[in-house]
Length: 128
Image (cartoon, rainbow, N blue to C red; front, side):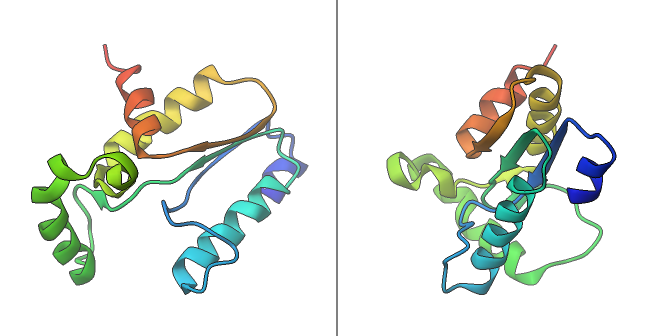
């Protein structure tokens, strides 16, 4: 992001994690939070932070932990509501569509954070 800013980039989008927190005791969440903080401080005027939960879709590599999590969470998706709604798995294609929509429509400087529900809404706005 800092290199992008030094070359005049107006916006930067980062796929992070629903649990991102630079103060977390969980390594993964802490690293994601630190990455978000660094991107926000990079000097790029418009920063989009996308915080998906478990990503679904085709992958080149097999990740056993994610496969197990997907198998467990997908049947529970209808009951993951209220404060648990952010745990609903989301397709990588949905995140990508949301990123494109945000990049093409948002020109106001600042940092935006998108939870899975916001990503779904943005992605739906790009469909023809």
